[in-house]
Length: 373
Image 1 (cartoon, one colour):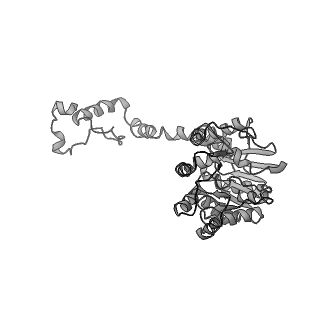
Image 2 (tube, helix red, strand yellow):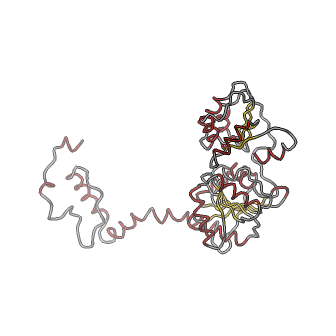
Image 3 (cartoon, helix red, strand yellow):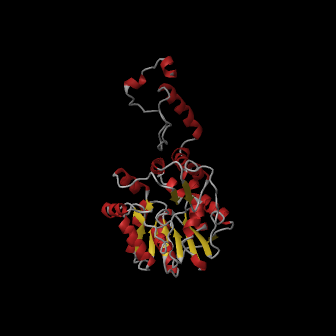
């Protein structure tokens, strides 16, 4: 936003100050002392400078909240509410957002009064120049699958999206360990490091960028040929935003998604939003898609009967099942129903409870009333 302000404001006299975390307070305070017309700020840093007495907000005429859905969705609601309470009641408030689902719209209505809604494009539309592919793999095979896809594609620059920030560093290390230099971009990084990473990516000094959804919002790099979804986004509109980083300015783009069998419902939601099926493809050199799905479907049938099968093998083969039931019933009656089901019988032994060596205290008769309780 700050860079765009300088570009579009080249021929007017308005001044601005950029107030963001992770940078020096001193430079920002000196800019404020000179006086500015426009503040471009993150909520936290704006509140910090206000509490230090560096800013007066009593004469603000226009409040602009960019990426409104993300601002509210990321937990900035208390900060935004505080900032709004510090502003004059008579003002103009504008929300700009790539997506506005109903649950976020309800929160946005807290700050708007009789708003006029302007939709520039149909909601959540993907560029027609982007091709979509999905590969179903096991969770443990995702890293290998990603490396195989990158190796098989002619990648000029690519963004790899993860759902969780904690996975980004591990994935970057894995790629670097396998000879694929990559950098990371997420909200927990210092501002100067994020800025340096973005500059290197724009200058084509970085080929692979592993990023979170929020950090990559608004990233405009025309040379991005591929987007890899290491994780399937749970919100289909996030998918549209992710793949919007490629296929820009009429260029062709490729979007690959790695899904596990459990992600089927999310993939279906993405297909409904796109209005077409996402092409299933196999990862070169790996068993994917239907092979993994069949294996997943077979797991419950192998796992669930296990205990029953062991009982049949250990008890059923040596003694008829009917003889064991009365003995277990008698054991429960003698012990107040507190014993668990009998273990499988060993060869050549009858199920006689604890055998001949029963402790004396277990042979005492319990009062009927207490036993019922």
